[in-house]
Image 1 (tube, rainbow, N blue to C red):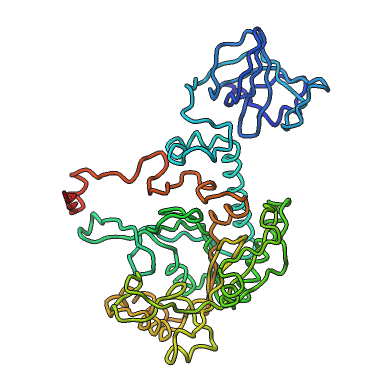
Image 2: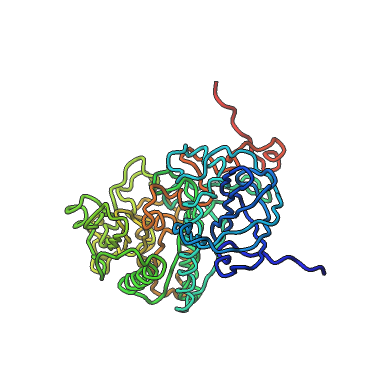
Length: 469
């Protein structure tokens, strides 16, 4: 094999004064002063100034290779705004690897003022801007911290299926037609809820995954359309108190490690009942910051004692028979408070659920509960929310599994996107996602959804109704 040239990263140049180096990256900016040209070269590690004479014609954002010597800048010319501000590269050779044409959107600004559809169309360029590039790196650091923290505490990372079964769990499902079983459909998971509970039956005891969740819900600033990522955690033989303490330690240590400039306003975190939060703050996700303009203040809190049920309307997606009065406040697998079990027969609306919501600066950034592990209680909840026999059959796998020895269990699922949005002070979850779906439901760059061909539809035994005139 032939010898390969050793590339030096931009950030490493400060340690290589008077050495010859090979740099590769993007041209961030060009300042032409006649015979002398100044080029700021950018790679994943930072930006460095390069100086040369009679350099070949090149455009901003072109990918180049620069060979040159690292030299110290004079004291009066040091740039304190960048890490490499004490050095510059005396260019000996510049080779254009790929030339860039003029970009369709500016990337030197923070990007907030640019139309979202334009940013999404050119998302691979939008991600070059410093703010977005930094957000992606922070996201990776947060995920890695969470993964390592859980691994060190005997959790097992397990992937659950993306193609699963449609069940009436709340939001609208995304359906996927089956080619091998024409007329039948898979559903993309709204969450791994049933699978993680079955893993508790399987004796895993401590499970987690960074789960992709799919819900056909209207978008909001704190909720992307279509899909999002949550850190899904489930544990056996735990109380609600165990879950709260575990999550509080995880996030406290995460903030200290990755966001040392930010301060948690109160510890232990405040705990509010749902009734107290609504009466005092008129919100079940109150912003408890002392100074709401201080982006570095983090006001974590727990909201507990939610009602297990809410009044069900005719439009409620949960309704089964159409005659039930109740809908789950959280989801149908949340355990009732043990002190309220008898109220399931007498007055279900007074039953509290063992649900816990994690709140940060006015956003719900996670939620979970202790789950029902008694088949008879689960069946009773199904009855109260009006499930028909056919709808109950859709969960027969759960009820059957629970007859073979199921431990008490529960968990929590912090939303990775929403947590990052809140802690970074971004205006939307889409600012912390690499390729988000727009508010109109269109995916970034690839222009989905799109029409299927006639041959694809025929193979799947699907006919699309013609648009009405």
